[in-house]
Image (cartoon, rainbow, N blue to C red):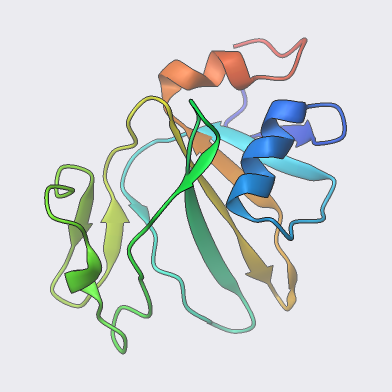
Length: 141
C-alpha cells in the first residue's frame, strides 16, 4: 500500500466529515489518508509563508477534541498547556517542541494550514486499526 492515499472528498463522506470537523473552512476537493507512524511534531507557527495546523478528531462521534496550544518552539514555549496524564502520547522537549508520540485507536489527527501562501491539502493520520474502515472503496491494504 502507498504511504499516502489520495481521497476525493466528493465521493467519500466519512473522510469529508473528518476533515470538515477538524477544519470547518476547508474547501479543497481532496485530502490525503495515511497511517500514523509516530513521533509527529505538532507545533504550529509561520515559517516562510507556510504554517501547519493540527486538529484531533474522535472518530466514534466525529467530534473535535481540544488540543493544547502549541506555537514556535523557540519563541512561544507553551508546554504548560499540555494536559496532565497525556505524557504517554505527547512530549515536550526543553525548547518547546511538542511531539505526538502515539495516536490511540478511534482518533485521527488532521493537518492542514497554509503552504507557500495557499491553502494546504489536509492530511488525515489514523491508527493502523482504523485505516481499513476509512479506505476508499476499491483500495487494497
